[in-house]
Length: 361
Image (cartoon, rainbow, N blue to C red):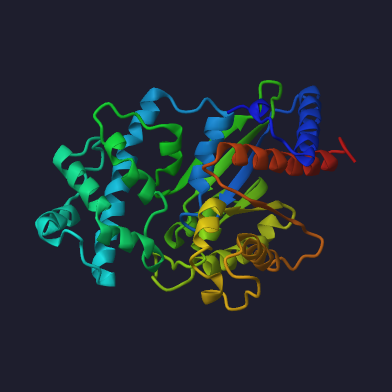
């Protein structure tokens, strides 16, 4: 998707786009060739890797047919992991299958099934049974209570599309790729130019967000232009997979405090992405945030009020009155939202860079 395709921009968006265009012209005149590092931080499953993939689609060359096909492995793994988690949830919550007798032999086979690491095909019989199981009323009841266990966000999407994603001729779409989940191990970098008229480029650095991966972060702390810290706001009712007890938003807030207090980043732009807004807006209608954050005083089932509460909770962590935290509500899988937000991010970063170089005042 090209930014010029965004036809429904607000006045502020149009102004930001115009500023961005002027900045690009100035950068071209000054023949800047630096790749400025944007460090993506946050806890596991906050959406960092999804954001990198979205930037590749929006500003890079996208994914080749061969690259798209390689995501079949991740999609199938996500599909199988999702149904396994739901089966385990049935047992944990004491829910019975609607067709208990016919499922009796197959459920253990699914639980014991290990999908080969590089396999991009799923046995047809196995796929058909998973589809039947997903349609079961017991499984659907379990899914409705998914906040009580660790179910990947994309589980419903891939299970709803099981016939398509297990077909022999299947090639993952951009949406499939954005929704597919694979834990980031180590450090992943992606560099892209900002349009054909600019020699200026950004380098996105994505590092694993799980606790065991964070010790590697120090290796990428040097020469950072801006930090984009992602928070999955939809996880306000969930606990960490690592310890099974710590609230995920509480962990994200603790980590955010550590980052903005770090001497490495005292002069670095801090950008906060309140991500997975779409899932949050749906969940807040049935799962009361006050059950997890008693200090919330807003109206029940009000997505706007609850999101403002979370935003304020994170921004209060900042004790430096001279530093501004730039916050955005985001849906990393939505190309239009991602493009609009990144346009604003680009302006924020460039204005500071160029003011420092006396290009703008």
